[in-house]
Length: 422
Image (cartoon, rainbow, N blue to C red; front, side):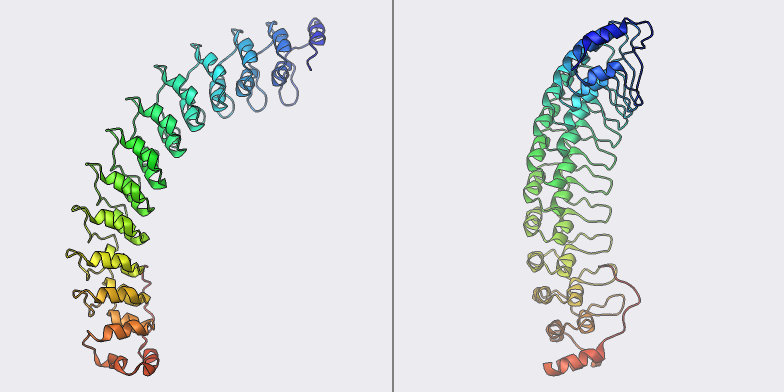
């Protein structure tokens, strides 16, 4: 409760200081505001010697506190004083306006925006403006209110380079996205410091409805790249977002073969992750290269064989334009990798293709059979022996199976000094 009568009696005394503060630098006015004692606030503000802008140790002035806590009546009383600073900031750079916007106090926001001495674009220490806070907190009413003004910059980013639109996309606030995208001056391709545009972010996380909304704008770039060289379709393929891949491929200006900094295209990423559905969608296009290679020289077929995605191996080998013998920078072919890792199913699929060469030699002088023997994959060794013209040291593999394990231990070679990348 507020003792208004006591306050009046005390203020009539000459020796009473109305601005005295406690150890937290809180004055009588700040206490009256915190406790919502409007009557005492009025009594104190009637005196010209009461400082309405005194901040406590956290940088909170009476106006900042009242704005943050939705105290419209007290905000109105404070703003009646000509010496109140309406744009004063706390230790984090937050103003009464931004505080009110964060907490969705629309009445206070409107009250402050009516003043000429309030800057709606003033950022806090994180570079966040009023509009950015409203978009981030899903306050559609405040976003509309701000965009009605001619002096609000809808593209101003925070210190991370994130615009109000990008924040709306990150939070999946479709209503705010639509409000922003209705404006021609909103840049839908503005990227943060990592190169993430709204479309890239939505594609990465599988926000299908968000992607649809963004693609309604003709000026959205579907082939934009982040700092790692990844495009929206690459992110969608990498993370298994099949419908999104279809959606993006409908754009005429999409490039399905753009590779990231590791040389990996959407097709390579889909292969590495085993997404057969996305593979089929991509391979239906005439402009997708099925033999693309990454920085290690590995093709989609090699990755599929290495990871034993036998369905994808078979899918690729159905095509006449896929070379089953393309080797990586270590000289290893898909068959060599499958034999090395013991993927018997992949070996069978590869051997079913007449073009698979069983005699290729990698940079260490090892053939697919050598790898099978070396790693103890007896079944694969038996599969590989028949089409091969064996050297004398491998004729033991033709002996009955009961002798095979003995021969394997004798034929095993010492470990390679080089560590091979997987």
